[in-house]
Amino acid sequence: MDNDSVKINKEELMKFYGYAGTSGNISLKAKLTKSWILHYLAYTSPYSNFIVSMQRSRGVKIGEGCHFSSYVLLDLIYPQMITIEDNVTISHNVMIFAHANPTANLFLKEKYPRKVEPVIIKEGAVINPGSIIIAGVTIGKDAMVSVGSIVTENVPDRTIVVGNPARPIKKIED
Image (cartoon, rainbow, N blue to C red; front, side, top):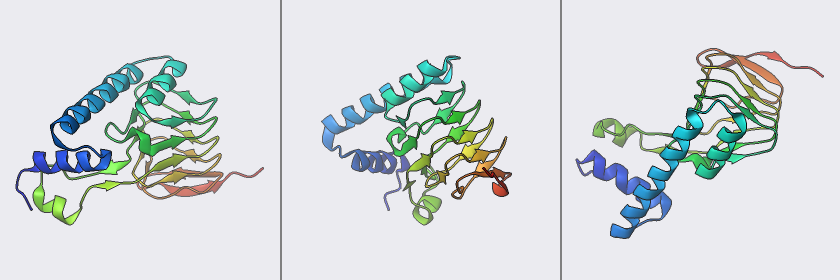
């Protein structure tokens, strides 16, 4: 393995986005810069509709009737890997990651290569403040993630999860 982690990381991103050469490098930098500017505008805004609009512009798939609070961090490199269905509530200081990657430690990078997997938050779900959702997780329909929970596995429909790692504590009945 090449021992330049910056070069390796850039090559991984170029490959993911289908870019090559100098023009691909420029395209990647432009894409990420645009995404980060739109993210910053969304992150600092108190207006849910504006936040949703900026995140959609980044490539996040967001349904209708969603409410986003400020200070929500949606994956900065792979926003298009996040799908949020209709009527979802995402509260303050929530982080949602569609990738995991030890970027500077080449030993760990070799053992745990870049993981890029979609995150899906289904219709009517509520993600409470300070929660973290990692790559590859699906949050079920009408499910609720409690304050400060770290979601590492799928959450079934109509289930309340809590803790680190998040675990089911209650099924929501009709």
